[in-house]
View 1 (cartoon, rainbow, N blue to C red):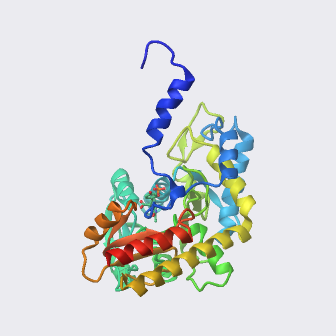
View 2 (view 1 turned 90 degrees about the vertical axis):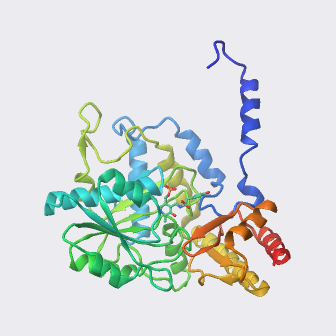
View 3 (view 1 turned 90 degrees about the horizontal axis):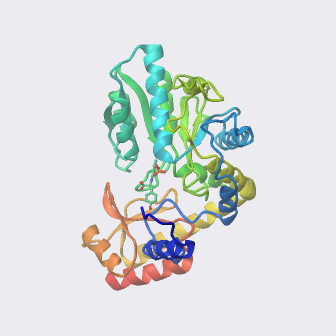
Length: 385
Ligand code: 0PR
């Protein structure tokens, strides 16, 4: 730190220079991100609530009510009449809370001490962090030929130490929806906690279904589902950080509660103590602003772009890994290694992401990637071909 105060203009100049090194969503070159530019209205609301702290909700009663309302709205979107949960920093924290709830519940009611969680090979790496922090062993369920969790392998993986089963609605690499109804049945029959990670798909599947897309059921209408991660800062167009964790019952929050004696509320179940109210307020505002109609329109546009891009790739001769269920396309050149192709695209100034299972180029068709960007990308891919 400098000894003397520095002029605001000088500080801003330095920061702007550094900020110029960042990539900008607006030029449509970021192909592998699940985040996008937040809606301006959400950013405006976010700034108004910057000083609110939901770590001490007795001091910020209004903002706490906003969090409760937004959790309730997300719950309704996921077929749950009365929802419990929090707006957190993202999918990682949401998944961590879900697994912590499952572990504590199993410890309290089943006496399980050295627990295990069953997760598919396609699960986001946040579950590895959760297992590490919570001292749980990961048992990986296999994927079937379509890269979805293999239902039989989940059944086989269950043991008397299983504290949770996880399935994904919108996998990170391919955007696929696991057979959640089947897994829900297995979890329910075996009285095991079932968590659905819909960090990516949660803000699109309900709206696509609403306008007639034939997508599988993934939400609380399935009685085995205990919690769902759904991130406003991905398909919800809310500013970062905004993750959502929704629980079916309050008990799952209670088993995580620790005493917080000197605060305005006497227990706390979230991982983070001092935490943003701005994320809840911005999410609340943007959900009201779009409504089901607005989100359906966005989801449809993105699916149209997905279909346009996938068709364009096939016409050139690229191979699609799987038919997209949500707005992610993964593809390969018939004879070129995906990393080599990625390198060529990087040289043309595309910010590419390479999936590992299977190795392929993966494009997440977020709101910042417009038709003209896709046309340019297809042109470049044609040149490379
Ligand atoms: N669950 C799923 C299914 C996810 O895809 C992700 C993140 C998470 C949980 C964790 O969410 P947070 O990152 O909010 O904690 N998926 C993307 C990924 O890791 C996140 C991302 C976003 C990556 C923007 C890059 C990027 O530029 O690939």
